[in-house]
Image (cartoon, rainbow over all chains, first blue to last red; front, top):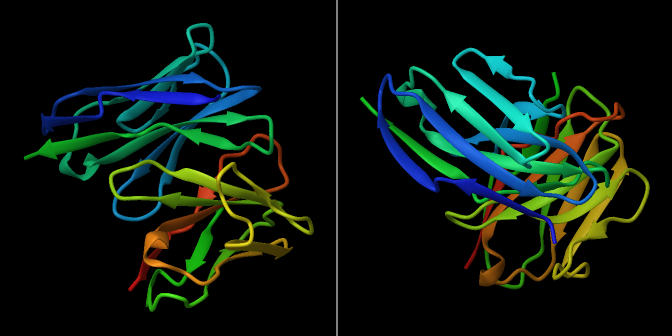
Length: 111
Length: 116
């Protein structure tokens, strides 16, 4: 059975701190690992990772995939209150790109 | 690009009512659409996958006669919750992918369904 595990489940940081979110996965016919940010509505896409060891960056966010260890991390540097959200990790399989989501990490950034 | 619109955003109705939720891809052709359900403080659970012009594939434990999915065109999929009951109250979210291989799913804004 496919499984995606995220840690920690929640954390509270101060503005300006750096956070690292973890995601381990076991997905049959694995194709890619995706990160999404969810605030009050539906998830918004952050990154899709298909190759090991290649860091993807978007502003203060970055992510990397380790296909040998079946692991990915999402880093947020210089956090702002607008980064407060649930961050979801999902593994995509070859079967139409079906996603298996983790439980999410709730990040709270305090002023 | 890659905008997915979902309607309505919020529904409150009486037990026994059937509710239809629409999911549209606004600026791309969605060959595959996905329907998820999310309970409070939980992650997204895939309900079904639908490819344009064919029957939906339902996940284990999801009643296909209860949750009717139609994907009649490349820009529209609908989910109908038939004879809804309070336990069907949840946040329903659709997503879509286009023809190109290895593209991320893009999500609609979700529909909050409350059955009284």
